[in-house]
Each structure stands twice: as structure tokens, then as C-alpha cells.
Amino acid sequence: MLFIFECLRVICLLFLYGYCIHALFSLVLVARGVYKRRAFVTKSQESSGTDLFLLVQVPIYNEAPCIPGLMKSLLGLQWEADKICIQILDDSDDETTDLIEQWLEMHPQSRPRFVHVRRGSREGFKAGALAEGLNRCKGAELCLILDADFWPEEDFGILLASHLMRYPELSMVQARWVHRNEGESWLTRTQSVAIDTHFALEQPMRAWNGYLMNFNGTAGMWRVQAIQEVGGWSFATLTEDLELSYRAQLSGKIFDYVEEVTCSAELPQTYKALRNQQFRWAKGSLQTAKLMIPRLLREGPLNLMTRLQGVMHLFHYLTQPILALYIYLLLYLPKPDSLVIPFIAPLFLTPFCLYIFAAYRLGKPIVPVVVTFPSLFILGLSMSIPLLRAAAEAFSQHPSDFVRTPKAGGSFIFYPSCMRDRIWQLIEVGFWMFLVLGIVGFLGF
Image 1 (cartoon, rainbow, N blue to C red):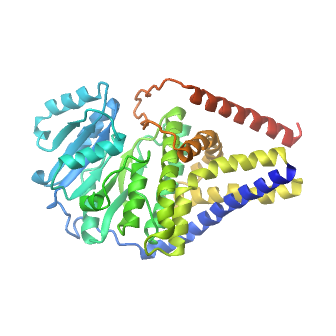
Image 2: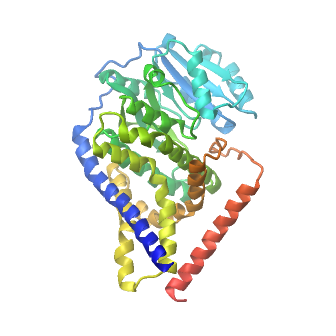
Image 3: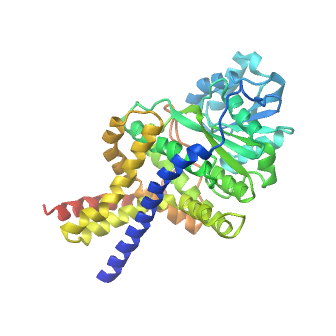
């Protein structure tokens, strides 16, 4: 039995080392990609694309606190008046619907560009709402998708459209997220470091080197024809954005990322909201992996590195549960002290280097990142059981509702606790209890 656990520890370590090597190699790829990327130009230098019909889609579900700021920002979007339609895809069952109608009544000049779309059900959740909106708006050529807490600047649509117009081969262009409430608490500061790393390292690494990247579900613009040519939105996963991204790129579509264009958003303000979000993202990613990896490995004129990058991208949510498992094996099957530090050091130093690199690229101060790093590690470790549950449900095809992430003080959606929920709660309590006991025993107290 001891031999089996030793083999498991080695497998976990090799898996984690693989991601460490991949992450460090990404630093080189980003530096190289800066010189290979498609140049970004402003609307004054190129055709802005405002002569094309723009469909703006904003899927909403019970997000009343976001409505005033959202509607104000949408009203200010610059585009030719007869070439824009803003769809508020409202599946709400609370006061959000009334607030939207009240705002539209108070701003009658906005009526020509806004369409308040109500469906009879939440079938397909966000993907279903997007598909319904696309079917209702015939003739749209470009589609800008925004979540309710994403409030764009006036020229946001023009900047993205300009990039699509300059490079006709592109089917989608993704903007960078920035955070309105970054300094609100330790939780939001910690999240901002992680998300900044995604947009300063992961997205440019993939987009600028020709690898498969993902549309982030919001703050991105599509050519409508590209969505239609690959079959439209699918309800098969909880991350419809990631699934469509891979389906489109495996069909030959090309994406790009422009870090110069930003859209302000709101970070989850509570741990419960963050945990729900991470569970949904992880389960959806692994559902997409089940669907797309067979195609990724055999279809398209992709080189080996592109396929490998895609596999690691789709499976990256497994790293946290596997790191937790490795820590357990280390605590309860300790090695000689002289071997512990060399083995685990790369697991800490690699993400630390990534966070520092991301802050440097974005021109942010380094010291707050250093101070935040212990919180990042603990927060990541706390997600191990929710992510493990996400993996188990994804691979066992257990269905889940699309639980939105509450923003701006919004109320949580309450789902009655079932036996499965209570079992996972007990597992999470046991995880922390045995982790603390393992640390105490390992340190010899």
C-alpha cells in the first residue's frame, strides 16, 4: 500500500511539474508574441466598422443592482444610430425586469436602440438567451457580448470593430477586463491578481502565438457569420463561451486578443459567490474537455504544440485538487527533510513569478502582489474540494443549474440543500480538519 501511495505522489508531482514548466515557458512565449502579434490601431487610423450592423447582447438574470450603471454605459456606446441594436436578454424572476422597464420609460430617447427580450423559460441558461437573441435579430453582422456588471466606455465597440475590420481573417476579438472594486477587500485584491495574470500572460501567450484561446464570455466581439457557420450557441456545457471558442477554432476560425482595449467589471464580493463562480467555470471547462479533446487531438492542421497547449488549457482546473492531494501525501507520507524543500519549491515559486510578471506587464506595483501571494495560495487551496466536485460531476455527466455570480450586493440565488450538497460540505470540512492535523504532525508539534 505504501508503494501505491508513493507512486501516486510521484504522478501528482510530475503532473504539477508539467504545468510549472508550461507556465515558465509561457513567459518566453509572451515576450516572443509581443513582436509577432497583429498591431492594434485606433479608430482614427483605420475604418471603424460603424457602417456594419452591430448587435449588443447583454444576458441578465436577477441582477437589479447593476441595472442603472449598465444601462447608462450602454446608452453612451458610440455607433451609427440606425446600425445598432442593444438586446437586454432578461430571464429574471425578480424586480430586475421592472427596473429595466422603468429605466427605458425614463429615457424615451433610448427606445430606438434598446430591445428588452423576455423568454418563457431559462432553457439553455445564458447560451439559450444568446441564441434566442441572435435568432430575433436578422441582419446583424457584428455581435458584442457583455455581462451585466461590464460597463464599457463610449468607444469600446468602435475599438474592437476597428481591429476586426483591419484583419478580415479574424472571427472574434477579446478585450481585457479591469476591476472597479479591486481595492474593496482582501478577497477582491486577491482575485484581481489572478485575473490580471490571465489577461497579461495566458491570453496573449495563446493569441499572439497562434494557439487556441478562449472568448471569456463577455467583453468580446464576434462576427455573427462565424457563430452561425459553426452551429451557433450550444447548451451542452456550463461554459458556453469556451465550448464555442474551441468548436470555432477547430473549424478554422481565428481569434485575437487586444490588451489595449479594456472594459470595467466587478469582482465577486463574497467567498460564496467566488466559490460558485469557480465551480461553474471548472465544471464547464472539464465538460468542454470531454467534448473537444478527441477533436483537438485528431482534427485540423494543428501542430503538436498547439494541441498540447489546448489539452493543458482545458484541464488546468485539475491542478488545484491535485496540488491538494500532493500536499496531503507529503504531510502523511513525509520524506526526509532534506528532500522536501527542493521538491515543493517550484510549486510555490512558479506562480509567484507569474504574478510578478503580470503586474510588471500591466504597469502595476509589485509589492502588493508579493503581500497578496500567501492569500492567493490559501484561497486556491480552499477551492480544491469545490473543484474536485466540479470534476466529478463533469466526468459523470451530472447536471447542474447555471448559478450566476451575484454582483453589486445582489442577493444569492437560493437552492435547497440536497443530500449530495451536504455530503460535499462534510468532505470539505474533513479536508480542512485533516489538513490542519497533517501540518501539526508534520511540524512535530
